[in-house]
Amino acid sequence: MTAQRNRDTAPELALRRALHALGFRYRVDLPIPGMPRRRADVTFTRWRTAAFV
Image 1 (cartoon, rainbow, N blue to C red):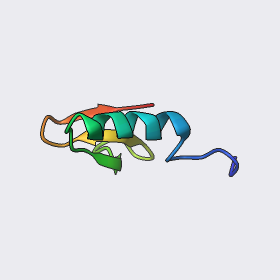
Image 2 (spheres, rainbow, N blue to C red; image 1 turned 120 degrees about the vertical axis):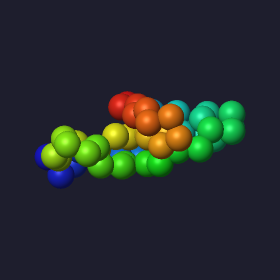
Image 3 (cartoon, one colour; image 1 turned 180 degrees about the vertical axis):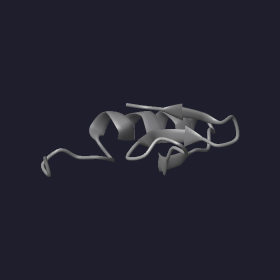
């Protein structure tokens, strides 16, 4: 299981590059309150929205 990447995978990086180019600001690998052992890939804190890739 250590060979599986938890973050910075190719699809995730492509999504982050596109979002940044469009001017969106986000947090990466943010823990989700109330859900232990779960982290959102991309989180828009301003809109309280999470994206999982």
